[in-house]
Length: 152
Image 1 (cartoon, rainbow, N blue to C red):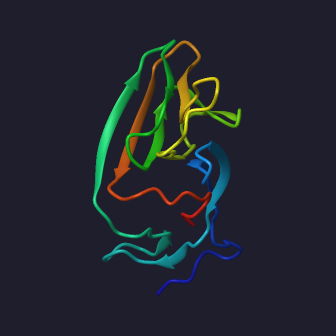
Image 2: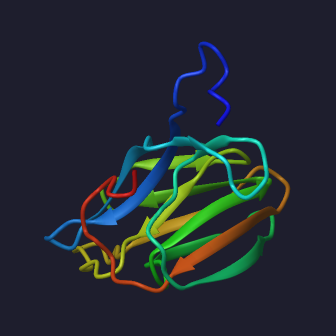
């Protein structure tokens, strides 16, 4: 097998994780995929791969119009959210608000939140700027883990 290019250490790919603690409060944590291995897939040249646990998933493409705001809600299932174009933001119950665009990743896993005294439950999200945000979501068919950064 071909060795990785000289000076090319295993990559680290950052993502945002919206998760729920045991008290039912949503948070956002900056996490990283950091278990890449140099390997070939089929007859292709070797590449860096960080294979995640297998499971069923549903892919949904979403277009959020400019000015769109989704008030407090939980993700429908644990899901990876990949912005394809435009920009969008996510605000968790702990007050952390993150804006993302193409090249960013988010793991939405805030199921089971408990509404606070202000009626906030889960997260808010919306478009940023004057163009739609096109997102690809990969809904995982499994239970939320309830701790940050468990995908590595």
